[in-house]
Length: 368
Image 1 (cartoon, rainbow, N blue to C red):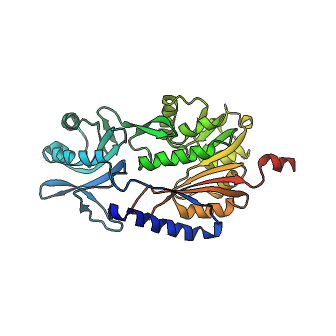
Image 2 (cartoon, one colour):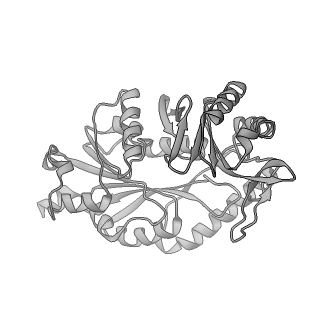
Image 3 (cartoon, rainbow, N blue to C red):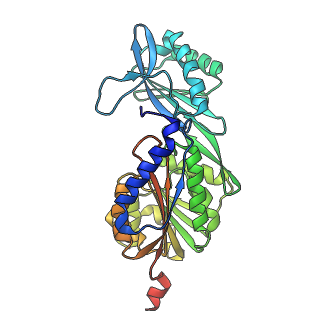
């Protein structure tokens, strides 16, 4: 686990920002908007090893490159609710052999709105006796519990939490499913959503969103556009996104389950896709593309696709691949706004947001 010292928070952020400015120097960035994290209790989800030693179970974590985990007694980066539940869970596990035997991992998923979910992962099959003990644990903690083992998933009550986020004066509710991706730092997530929403306000037209996940950005950005076409490859995320759109009353979004590479082929007419047979791509008046790719960044074909849009909103979890992508994108687009979001304090990670405008707009290009 990283060294956590709230007194050094500003220093560690300044050091990361200095490194990023040096790395992006050739791109002539505008003034960078900086969005800080709470110095402690900012992480909403976490996974811990369960280390059995001298007849007791302990929470443990692994350092990079080391096989033997080290025992932890506290987790200050975790949410306040997570830190409250951790000792309660450990005491219950140590008092209940049916829960502790061959338990090797515990996962916590919490929210700012006070919801929580605990997943216990085993190297054994989960039988009815385990379920009886787990239900007693669930009642004692007041938190839903899930059991997992190879080819098994026992859901005692539900396999999701509900988060409530405040963005630009509006309240959004999200179903966050166990094992699905969610933004780990909810406070910074609110700031990312607010930043993206503020710069999408003047774009107009329709939006194409790649990698929409559970609709985290989709629900917020949809209000700024006539229509939204969003893509996502994960079935679990698509189901969550559709649920979240409905809960938030968003009715101008169509989600297609396909990768960005496949969608690029479809838009370029390379080959037809059955999943798009009921969608008339030519009817969309796309002004803007929103991308939030994995750490590998955008592939070359998706970069070329993005360059066809008047506006690009790019959220990046990896400055290195972002820089590579921007070296290509800035041949056709100008960086209007650049932001950093400290999603993971006390680590080298830094999330970035970029808003770019086409140097020659699509309409102007067509006229020429």
